[in-house]
Image 1: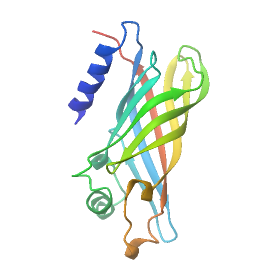
Image 2 (image 1 turned 90 degrees about the vertical axis):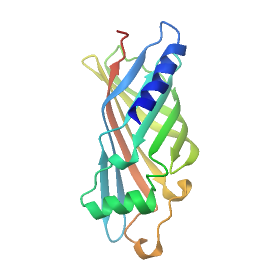
Image 3 (image 1 turned 60 degrees about the horizontal axis):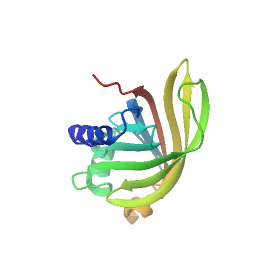
Length: 183
């Protein structure tokens, strides 16, 4: 899976002008939180990968669903087998454009909007999601927090566990950005 994204990013870089600046996500973490009446559920994925092409202000982000870690193995099993069907839909992706002013060469916090196609569980939706690009001591990073409605991505919640899983989950993303330099 990682090699497939590397191939896609490689094609993107090859097609980009020589002056293109591409930043790769590094140490990326994606987590989600479900606040339901009977139980709160959290999970974290450390395996997200992606790239931001500054010349085209475009991005591609991929999250391997099976890499989400839960507080207990039964939750993880149900998540993969019953809800996200990770064998059939192994990745969540978000690709699109970045809107709003930012300068990754100047320290500061830049509120931007990521506009594009969010694909989870094989169902894609156009979304405009708030994000923050942060540059501190010359090191850029990315932060985002947004809500995802399970029904929007045809993720069914059985009535038996309806009060244990929220209809909407909060997704949090954080990652350092590293300039991809040709070798």
